[in-house]
Amino acid sequence: MPPNVRHRRLHRILAAAAGLAAAGTLLAALPAGAHGSRPGPQHPGRYQDVQLLSFNDLHGNLEPPAGSSGRVTEHQEDGTTRTIDAGGVEYLATHLRQARTGHPYSITAAAGDMVGASPLISGLFHDEPTIDALNKLDLDVTSVGNHEFDEGARELARLQNGGCHPTDGCYDDGETFQGANFPYLAANVTDEKTGKPILKPYWVWKKNGVKVGFIGVTLEGTPNIVSAEGVKGLKFGDEVETINKYAKVLQRQGVQSIVALIHEGGVPASSAYNYDCDSPGAGDGISGPIVDIAKHVTPAVDALVTGHTHQAYVCTIDDPAGRPRMVTSAASFGRLYTDTTLTYDRATGDIVRTAVTSANHVVTRTVAKAPDMTDLITKWKTRSAPVASRPIGYIAGEIGNTGTESPLGDLIADAQLAHARSLDPEADLALMNPGGIRAPLTYAASGGEGDGVVTYGEAYTVQPFANTVNLVNLTGAQLITALQQQVSGANEASPKILQVSKGLTYTLDLTKAGAARVVVDSVRLNGAAIDPAATYRVAMNSFLAGGGDGFAELGKGTNVLVGGDDLAAFEAYLTANSSAASPYPVPAADRITVLK
Image (tube, rainbow, N blue to C red; front, top):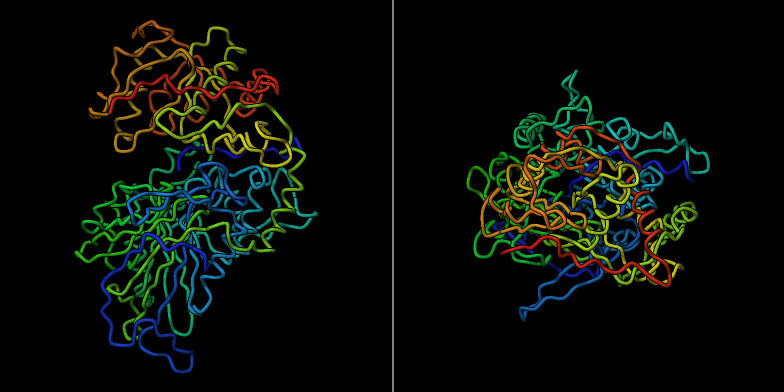
C-alpha cells in the first residue's frame, strides 16, 4: 500500500487447519474423470491440475503482525463475523507446505511488496532476512511492487542477484548475501535510457511438458507513491499494454497458459476474507483500479494475482471476450494465502478456464511453527535486539492506526509539529499521510518490556521510512487545496485523509463528491478560520513535501526547512511526554468531523 520512501539505514546506530474462504469457482466443464487427475510423468493424461499458491504485500512481516494488522475477519453462516489471529512466516511456511502435500504440480507466486515498510527485524538489515525467508518458503516467482523501489533500482537488483550492502556491508557473519532464489518480474519498469525492463518481464514454469508463463507488473502510478530518488531514471508503463505485449511474446514461444502478477488491486464490498465477491453477479462485489485492468487484459491471460490494496478477494471479472476470469488477492502481511487450481489441457497447452477454482485460506497460528523459520527469526531478532528492545515511551492503551482519523495519526502529527517548533517557533500545524503509518502501537508487551512500554522496534514498525520532517510555507488557499486533494483528483476514488495536528479542525462531508467533500468554511486553526491570503508554516514528512500520494499542492511549498528524521521526532515526543507513572493517553481522534 502506498507511501513511500527510501529505506531507513539504521545499521549505523547499531495447511490442514487453514480455514476455507472466499471460494470462487468457474463452472467445471471437463470430460468425466478428467478434473483432479494426477497423471505421472510416464503416462500423462490430457488434463493436469496445477496448484497455484499465492500471496502479496508481505512487507517483511516475519513475526506475527501486532494488533489489527495481525487479524482477519471471517463471515459466519449465521450472518455474524469473527476475527482470527493470523500471520507470521513460521505459520505461513507450515500452511504452504501442508497445502502442497499431494500436489506434485504446485507453483508459489506473489504479487509484490514482499519487502519495504518492513518491521525492524527485517528493515534494519535492508530486508535480507525477508529474502532469506522467501527462499525457504520456496517462492517460485513474484512481481515487483512499489515498495521494492524504496531504496532504488540498484538495491532491488542486489536483493535479486546478491552481494553485500554497499554502505553497511555483510551482515551474515561476513558471508556474502546470496540474493533471491526466485525471479522478480518487472515487465513495465524500464530504464529511461535503454527502454529495456530493469529485471525479467516474464518467467515460465515447466514440469513434464506442462508450461505456465508468468508476467509481473507494478502499478503505473508507482512514481507518485515512492520517493523521486527511488525511481530516478525509471519509466513505469501501462499495466494492460505491458501484459498484453508480453502475453503475445509468450504465445509465440509456445506458452498458452499465462498468469499475470499485478501489484495493483481493488476494494471488496466486505472486509471479510471469505466474502462472496461474485454475489449477486460476477465482479459485482469489487471496485477499484483492478476492475478496469481485468476487463482489458487480453483473454490469453488465464488468471490475475493482484495486491497493493491489502484487501482479500476471490472474484471473477469478465475478460474482453466476455469470459469470466479469476482475480485474487490475499490481504497483506502473510495473513492469508490463495489456493487456485488451474486445469492444464495438454492437447492445447492452455488452461481450461471453466474449471478454475480458487479460495483464500487463513494463515492461522494454531498449526506447528516451521522450525527453519523459527531459527531464522531467532537469528535476526538476536542481532536486532540491542536496537529493537530499547524503551522510548509509555502508552495508556492501544493506539490504533485505522479510521478516517486515527488516534495514532493524531499522535504522529503532534510529534512532527513539536519537532518543527523546535526548529522554528512559528510552525503552525503538521500533516501526516495515512499510508506512512504502517502499524498500531499495541499496549500488550511484544517481548519482556512490559505492557504499555513502547520500544524502538515497535516505533520503527509504525514509521519505517527514511523521511525527514520538513517545514514549508503555504498560503491558506494552498492549505485548503491540499485538503481538497485528499478526496479529489487522483484520490477521489480512494480518499487519502491526512492526519492533522492539534488545533486544526474541519468537517468532511462524505455525502458529497470530489473536492466539495471538504467543507471549506469549517476549516479552522485554533478556532480561527483559515485566511486564504495568509501564510502558514506547515510541517510534514519529506514524502508529502515532495507532492507524494497525489498531494501536488504540498509540493509547491516555499521557504523549505529540512528537519530531522521522522522516527527520531516520534521517539523524542513520546519520551518527553510519557513516563511509567504518566503514560501517554489514547488520543480522541476528534479533529475531523465526518458526515456520512
